[in-house]
Image (cartoon, rainbow, N blue to C red; front, side, top):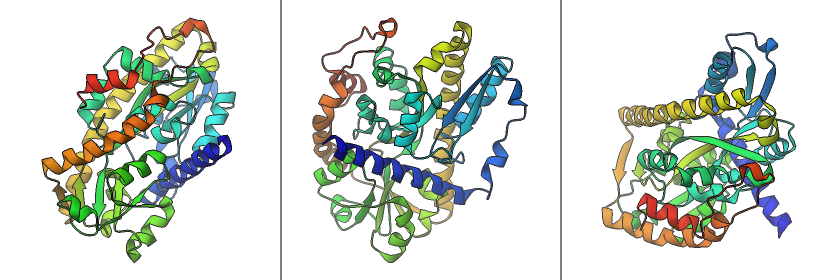
Length: 366
């Protein structure tokens, strides 16, 4: 069972790695040239290597560079964030292991792969729970709920500081979807993740589990006729060149969670630890706002290029939400589990009997 789970997570990581690396086609042949620091980092007292699988053309991924520059300024050149996006360091499961061992110091990990070391992080993947920018802001500002969520990996020696994302999930399709009956005729590409597959099974739709590199050809050849993804991703990666329709669902958000090796972080002087946390928080808050704007821009660009945006009737969205509740029930135990911390100094005093239920009630989920 353990080997099977590891194999699954490795596959998910590989898919995420290839998927996000594909954004390179939307930028220059040497995209990182644009992001070089405008300062000489050689004099830094502390270097923090941070990984991400994606491309900084997505606002949520550019977080690492924004943290780098602001932290350099706020610490007067004492800390240098050596940010390595585009899967430079490998797939997410591999990099998570490097982070845990201290070979690197930080990571902007996808919420899908994050469950490998912190099952509680899977909370944001549940359908219709934290499924809008407004709800995400509300959750981030929830105090003990968000703090508890961000401690999902502390038992692994990893601390979580904040989150950014890449928009709301819906359907990009080659034929218009105006009803669930229309959706049943579509072959949806979904990622190799248990939550996604279970959700589409509950919806009684036709999921096709497929690696992201296979999507362009499969879409053109009609092997798939729809994508489960966000407007920004579909527009930036030119999927709208084939899939001319987009149906709003907004059932979940694509997120990156910014995590760091706890031992390394605590090796910093207290004043730098404080500055580090403040900078990550400030940058992530700003990036989340910019991500909202990026989605608006990408949708408008798509509309200008002839993409038709559609919505399901409210009662049918409610039906999808009701069926999707089975996913909440299946993963509740994993999300609710409380793990002992490696050190008592950061022991989480908030130990809810049913964390998922408290979040559901706070978010107004019914």
